[in-house]
Amino acid sequence: MPRIAYLVSSAREIDLLDSGGHPTGYWAEQALTSYDRFMTLGADVVVMTPDGGAPVIEPCSLEPHFHHPAEDRGYYASVCRTFHRHPDRIRVTLHHSADLELVAARRIARRLVVAGRSAEEAHELVGRAAKIAWQRDRKLVDVMLAEGLDGGLTEASLRQAVEELAVVSAAVAEDRRARLEELDGFRSPVALAGLTDAELGELDALFVPGGHGAMVDLPESPAVARLLSVLHRKGAPVATLGHGAALLLAAPDRLDGQWLFEGFRLTCPTNEEEDQSAFGGLPWYLANALQNAGAVLDDAPYPWASHVVVDRNLITGQNAYSTEAVLGAFGKALGPA
Image 1 (cartoon, rainbow, N blue to C red):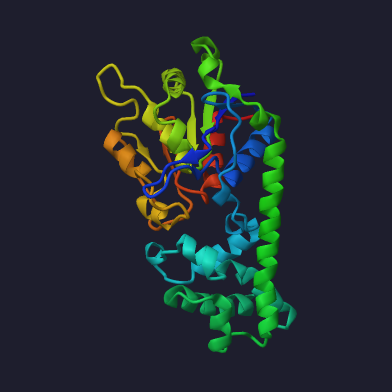
Image 2: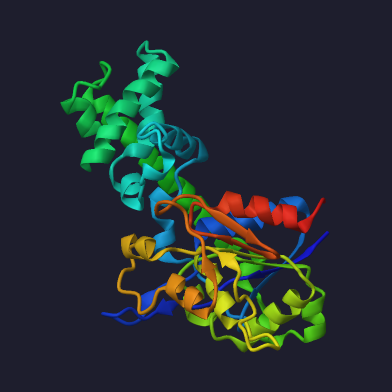
């Protein structure tokens, strides 16, 4: 089975434009979902940080809206697809999924079915209300009540559906936090800086989850530069999620003086996504830095869409919602089990 270098930032703070020492770390869902997938495949996963320091979870990655169950996110996506017949004109941002109750659509539709509506009728009714909420920046339940789209459900029932999703999502976030903090590899990671080139050569692939911490200790790390050089020479798969792409900035130049990933198509959090995040005030944008280094940025049509880009041995995912897409592409690059 492949020996995967699982590189995590060990940074705990990031300086913003208006304040220093803002808590940061790695992204919880990206880290646990990917780690679990690799263990299921039977891979030899070597968790490492640049200096061997134990990594910490980025606090904002534990917000419940980043941990909505898959079935709720899937139903939400099916509702969003009804907003416009041209997919590129459907701009669904973090604000829509976090603040407007739209992800509760499945749980409201389920109550409509119990009340006697068919599944198709429930989807159409919730979809009409969700489109109005999306267009007018209003909460879903408020729209259903004000526009007569409640389907006979009481206000209490509608609001209970929203609260149910919030409780379940918070429980998922807490479970992920607890599991991550118990993983031996995360509690005592290998120090990348202490590995020899020969030991690096025994690695078959590299995976880097996101979190703003990656912008702190990965871009200028000599150890990361060595790792990228060794793996790039052998054409090993290199996959990043979200801000994990910051490690590419550490890549050395080729013999012709060009950056190692010059001309590669890739993706990472866009400037618009950064501005919508809880951080704000970042001293620099990762997307700009990668473009300035020589990358060809390839982002999704709208913020927070799942988006993966594969160019040669490099696999990159845009944001927190791109985990499954990246893991699928990475699995193909690793080859059959």
